[in-house]
Amino acid sequence: MDQTAIAEVYVAKKNNRLYTVSDLLLQQAQSGHAKKTAIVDGQRRIDYSDLLRLALGYAAVLKKAGLQKGDRVGIFLRRSIEAVVALFATHSAGGVAVIIADVLHSKQVEHILAHSEALLMLTDSRQLLQVPALGFDRQRIINMDEIVPGRAAFSPVSAIGNDLALLIYTSGSTGLPKGVMVSHSNLLSGAMIVSDYLRVTEEDTLISLLPFSFDYGLNQLLMTLFTGGTLVIQRSLFPAEVCRTAQKDKITGIAGVPTLWLQLTGAYSPFLNTSFPHLRYITNSGGSLPESVIRQIRKSHPQVEIFLMYGLTEAFRSTFLPPDQVDIRPSSIGKAIPNVEILVLHEGGRLCRPGEVGELIHRGATVTLGYWRDPEATARVFRPHPLTDYGNGRAEIVAFSGDLVKTDSDGYLYFVGRRDQLIKTRGYRLSPEEIERWAFGSGLLANAVAFAVPKDPVDSHIVLAVTPKETDDFGRQAFDRYCRNEMPEYMRPHDVWVLNEFPLTSAGKPDRVRIKQTYVETR
Image (cartoon, rainbow, N blue to C red):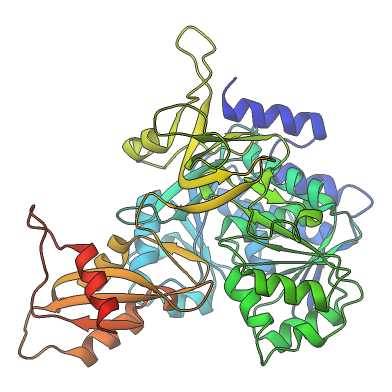
């Protein structure tokens, strides 16, 4: 049985009416939750019934614009009621959603639309102002500020759990972002599994701080709607405003990344000194949370459960550390989530013993379908199970994470590092080549090498070492202006280090190791 079939069986067992993402909203809107608030967006609120009505209305708009089953739809919207409507409209119309980070600029958005071969794009006037140089047919852009759907009846297009539902664009170890192919069953399984171990119910009100283009943030949305809870969208990440919303809306769960928790526990944040009587749990993923931060939160909010989690986009969700283990082993990423198996494989092909470092291999319901239009990368990451063969040449496909981990004697996992050179900054992961590619677009550089240096215990600064085309007259201000206009903030270099020439490897390529080492030694 392959991974998508496993996922669909799990979905069917949990609730035989849920097979696709659009089924999720249909069921809630037709249940006792119809008039319950689903999304809070500033001063606006929308219940499940109206959310479904709008989603079906925009689904009809997409169909009228020519959308066929399986066509991709770019969703370029900030976190909002409209973004949720756009997602469910796309699935109801039989399309594949491509959620584009709202902070991206023209070139990055254009790459994702072109690579995904998107037929249409759902957006609004605010986002269009951000991409004035976007090379996408304006006739295929649906501006949700200008089009109000009618009330004609629309029946969702038939689909099954194994069908492609979503492309998540994420940086790999090389090149531009790759589109991870996620099925309906992957998405529903992730929502079910995580809501299960977090014990999320219809009584919960969660706060949304993370982008829907980030699998962690998207899963929080789907988990909330799956359980019939309420999601409060908080766009400002200023600690005082996050705390104010958590109190005002009686938030019961907060999901964050290490940089966010560092801000919330910082000297100028009221988080540690504010009472949150309704807050039941917090989660962390996207990197390790320093033990000092964990201790601060535990001391200030002893009633709050802390779930330390790990995931990779290629498998959606992977491991978690139960709250009762946080004080005992705070540096652990835990064990496999329900309905998932995690293997630690030695480079020799055998399972690692406790304490041995090996690659984390993910097996189970949330393993995705591979990379869009990239069979070579898919073959490298999504491979046959190394220890199981079902015969007749058939083997289950598992995800090789590229992450190096080890286990202790009790089977708890610990992150060691990456096999590749991925840069993690502000909750995003980027390949050096991706940063370099956009920097070369300035036309001012002869060569460029990007790398990361530690900023604090949880985050890094991006450094870009460059050799200018015109060494005597490098237009530094012009280059800085290009970076501000063409690169999202999280991708921009914190420091541009100008060199007359790069040290080279024996193959004649820039020596990345020596360049970074020299930079660190001279600072």
